[in-house]
Image 1 (tube, helix red, strand yellow):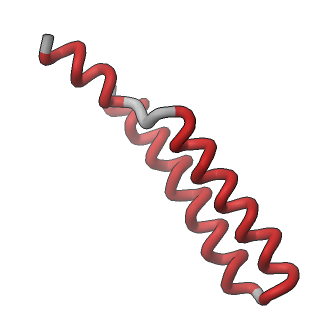
Image 2 (tube, rainbow, N blue to C red; image 1 turned 30 degrees about the horizontal axis):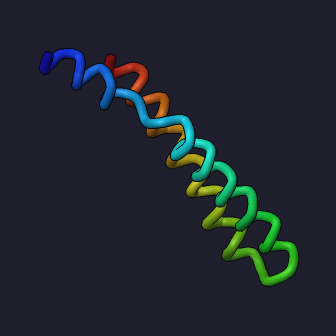
Length: 60
């Protein structure tokens, strides 16, 4: 039972992953209007979620 719970928690849920990517893209689009800081933040958010997903997949 504990092993099945760990398998479920081992991978980040898809909706959280895609929400993070969407927020990152939205911030990059805002950077065209409000300055480059939004673009840098958006890029970092996208990289964070991608590396988190890869790390959790490799950890299994």
